[in-house]
Every structure is written in C-alpha cells, then in structure tokens.
Length: 597
Image (cartoon, rainbow, N blue to C red; front, side, top):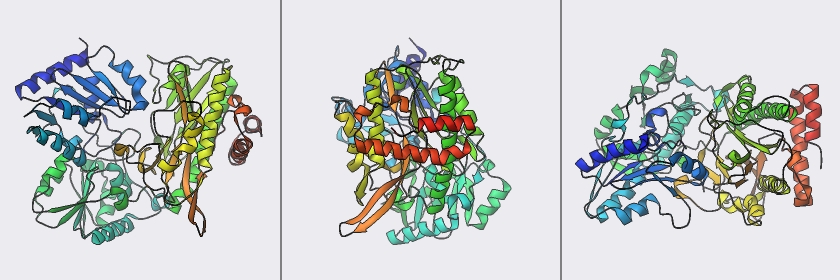
C-alpha cells in the first residue's frame, strides 16, 4: 500500500465514524483560484497528482480523480500504484462528478467537503443532488486537511502598490466605477473574494500564490468604505497610509465571516462562482443577495490603453529574451551538454535580466521528445533528459513584469525530424496564423472563431484536448476569464464571452502524439476594432508576441500562398522589432531564421 492509499484509508475511517459516504477535495482555495498556494494542496497530499486542475472524490470503496485533457498522461503516471482511478473529463462515457454522485449517493446519504474551497454555485449543485436522496451535506470543517502533518501555513508575502503608469487608472477611479455599477443594480454592498479581482481593483500586488502576484484577501465594499480583509503584517506602513487616504480599511482576514453574519439588511452583490460556499452561508438572512457576473462588475479583462502600450513594450523585451534563447539553443545543441532543466534555467536567466522582471508567470514547460505530448509537463531531476541534435523541444514559458504578463510557446527543431513531424509542425503554424489574422463582426466569441485554428488539424482527423487559447491577465493570472478560444462551451471554464476590444488572449493550437512528440506554437493577441460599416463593427487581432517560428520545421507544401504571406509578414515584423537589441552574430542568425520563404 503506497502512502497516498494509506492517507485515504485514514480518512475513510473518519468518514465511517461520521456516516459520510463521499468526501470531495477540489483544487481550490478560499477564493476560487485556479492556482493555489501550498497550504491548499490537500488534493495533492491525498492523491499525489500535482496538476493545476482536478478534483478528488473519495468514497467508502472508491477514489476517483477528475481532470481534463491537459493532464491525462501526467495523471495516469502519478496515480499509478494508488487506489485512485482516473476519470478523463470530456471523454465519451465519463460522467462528471455531479453525475457520478447522482448515480451513487445512497438514499439518506452524506456528502462532505470543506465549504471554504467550494464555490457557492457548485455548492448549490451539490445541495440539489443531496436533497434528491433526502441526504445531508457537511461543509463546515476541513476534515481532510486535519490529517496533513507539517501542513504549510497560509502565505503572508509583502504587498506592494502598482503605480498608475502601469495600471492606467487609480484605485479611487476604479472604486467610483464599481459604486456606479452597484447603484445601477440597486445594491448596497459588494462582496469580492477572487484574489485577481481584488488585486486589480486596489492596484495592489503580492506574492501569496506561486507565479501569480496576488495576496490573500476578501473585500466588502459599500458606498463609503472598502473593507479589505487581509493578513495585516503583509502591509507596510506606507501602503497602509495610502490605502487609508483612499478610503480602504484593513481588517483581519477571517473576520469576513463574522461581519457577513452581522449585516443588518440591504442588498449584497456577489458572483456565486467567485464566492465560496462558507462565505455565502455566512450572509445574514436579513440581507437580500443579488447574483452578478464578476466580469461585468470588475472589467479587468478589458485592458486600457496604458496597459496595452505597456504590454506591447514588454512583449518586445520578452521576445528578445526568447530569441536569444533560441539562438543559444540552436547554435549549441550537440556541442555542449544541455538538458530540459538546464535549457529552462538558461531562459530564466535571460528573463531575470529584464529590468522590470518580477517572476515567471508559471513553471516553464521544457519538454523534449515524448515529454512534449504531456501538455503541462514540468521537468524535475527524476525526469530530466539530455537534449540531442535530433527531434524537437517544446518550451512554453512566460514572465511577470510591471508592464504585464507574458506567455509564449515555441517548438524548436534540434536536428533531423520525420516528414510527419514537419507536416504537423507546419500545420500548427498555419493554424496559429489563421486565427491571429481573423477579421470578424463584433458579437463573436472564441467559440465562433476556434475552427480557424482547429480546422487544418481536424482535416487530418486529429485534435488537441484543450482550448485553443485563454485570456491573459495584466500582472495577474496567466489564465483569465471570460475570453478564450475553444470549439465547445465548457461552463466551468467560463471563457465563451463576446470578444471585446482590449481582451488579450493566447492563440496556441498544437499536436500531441502520446509517447512520441508534442508541438505547440503560441502567440498572445489582443482584440481591437477594425472598420465599421453598414454590416456593423468589424474586429480583428493585433499580435503582441514577437519570436521566430523555427523555419527548420516548415514544409511549404502544406501551406497555401496566403499562409506563406502571413508567415513572411510575421517574420518580417519579428526581425524589425527584435534585431535592434541583438549583437552582430545574433542579428545575422535572426535574419536567416526570419527569411521569406
């Protein structure tokens, strides 16, 4: 019996004592975050699966991990030898957790979970399932977490202010806009729990989640004051003074639950997908609750002109680092020892030298040969392999800078590759450029446009088991709703909103051949207005990412004249924007790798 099965068996003993049929452990924190700090990795502790998405359901005689297509391969390997079965979300015949519970929760049964890490909307779904069998929910204790010996403390990293030259708007202006929204809805208060939304609203950043510069906080806002529930030791005297001037009062982090219980009437606005179940259950019965869409209330996904100009600037700096990395990799492969990890470290050093660098935006994916087929592979000493002058290396990486967040993927040809690899590499490039060059009427979402990227691969009878792209925050999470590209709507992803001018989205089609190789080419693009005529407002995309696409992988027979024109235009712009920052040898090399084909 491995350690994870032993931990599950101990939890089952308590479940039996309390007559609990199923215990649910999601990947979440008190704030519905996608990425969480170490304190909240209870699912990892019980299952050993380290992916950023997945929920563990433990029954008396079953244990199942539900995760999406990005993590199928990783989850299979990490669950091997344990009692946990993999449920491949989105695959034919695989039920969602709610469907599984509907089928297996017995009459009068009990479902338990920690109400602080389940959002209100999910909690309501579970309530309906339990009510149907006249059962009960236990939600007020972190029952699983109590077994975690040496559990890390909640993070309390220093909080800093983001200057207006980066944010483009003062927090007082943002507070005023939020209060106008509140008035239009007839609300008296707003409750915020999402860390990214609070950070954006207050023009503050922190370090409580790895690679996502946010701080643990709740916010309760009325017409006069902003109550910010935090770990106060994270705030310097200077930051506190500035907040006080702007009408922000700091309060103790856990006091939010008590203060919600003490509300005496009025109308409270919140988004049920961004407020945890325990918070919602704490709201006084005297209060009217009005559900709202967080993305309409906190429009952080629509970047302002200051943010957009900053992003244009930082993508050139970031592109220089990526181009220097590509030059180093391509000219040294087979001459010096390079591994997945040492390549990743070299790229990190290049980014760290950028003057406004703060952190990576996620753990770099440096994936050679078959590792590239694992969409979110991370090299560690046990898996690190040497790179050879053959096959392909996929590198997905990005940085957090004062001027914004970057995310870029390139697949590098290190030596001889098969004709099939070149075909797939070329069609992934075509797919990315097809979408980046789209022109469309306002009102379209990524759901309408995804076929432009996926179509060339569907024509081969292949697909990639993920979306084509995700929204990107501004010095926030590298994954940001509500904009994205995917061919079918996935409600829990919340990324099918109408594309608005100022939305920044990744464009990253790929091919993943399990056990052989993976290919992904990713640029960030921003939605902008184009012409307006009798048919309506047309929209298009402006490219933000400027990094060569490895021409050693391009087979022109798979491109039509328009594809070739798009690639040549892109490479011409890459050379124009990046070459001024390179030395002579790098510049000569870049001219060759951005040549017209």
